[in-house]
Image: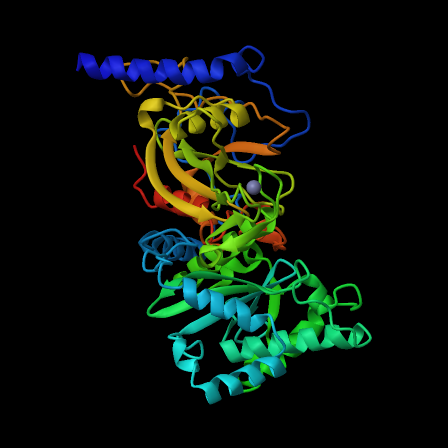
Length: 493
Ligand SMILES: [Zn+2]
């Protein structure tokens, strides 16, 4: 017992040390930013509120109808029963040792015009050399196309709220690339550009394997779809895609659309698709930002089937692998766990509230990051003894890994100890307005009702009148996962 107390005290001291340098200029006070209306409740305003036994009055809430309550429990349950956070799937194979030679062949295919490819195949057939290829890309390979940083996907109908990725076969992809190259050729007054010109070739990387199918991501250079000459650069590519997918149903091709993954990730229906697309997005972001060696400045080239890049300068030849930035995302509750600390940034769509989060700094543990970020943004001190890992989530926009925690705020220093029936005020909130527009303590009943809305993680989301008052991120976000887990727990009396 003594050891435990000592350990607890040490952790507290560590957390205190981490934040103490800020505390001098950042003392929690009962101060509200001028003109800000607090809803439903801020600890800073009502420091004597006995929140552990009182129920919050929700009659004024726009979300308090019985039907929305029923929906709330349904959505929350679905979210909770999911086994892993969105954008990940444990069955995606990531061992790329089997794909290198196929990757080289694939890269070569995309470098040439279709006519040239056909010519080469004919020659290969005549020489009976085609047997050297052990890979048949016409089977068991699916290709994700990224252009202008957007991914192509489709919906069952234009108004549908669900979507699925556009996976191309190798021949469909060849058709699209051939069309774009042919157009480039004709728009260049018949002058064929050098295939080896930097950045002109389509980029391809192996993404992973799922149920015996290899997934690849392909990006087209912007020049290849004549970005500067088209009023809507993607529209020309769409016409090529429609043509290439002519064997698909009309409905399928008519709903083709391209958006950044983050903007449509909530609408994906199947979690393994979300995992594959997220990996593809992260790989492309890595290759885009590592064209040059960070040691010698020389150009780099893709290696290991797109899993890394290598410097091309003799004598250097250093390899670089995708870097992952660690960030913590934490659901901080009141000490009684009936209230959650949620905040919003001014850049978010109106009404969106989420858990606090922040990047880990050099020399810092994830636990220390939780405590520091919470204090910096809200002035609330986390009880280091309450920190608990919940789940992690890849967030390759461009390269983060979100590590999700639960934590309790320290009981207020003004609280009485002993009977358990004495008032235990919610800790006061001091918002770091450089980071956050608003942060509040939200009671569980209120948040539960918010879960009845599907929410959204998209930055371009257009909330309706109800969502403008309060909504939390959609299913693609680890924040919703953390909030839903907490919301389905019994209220503590
Ligand atoms: Zn180098």
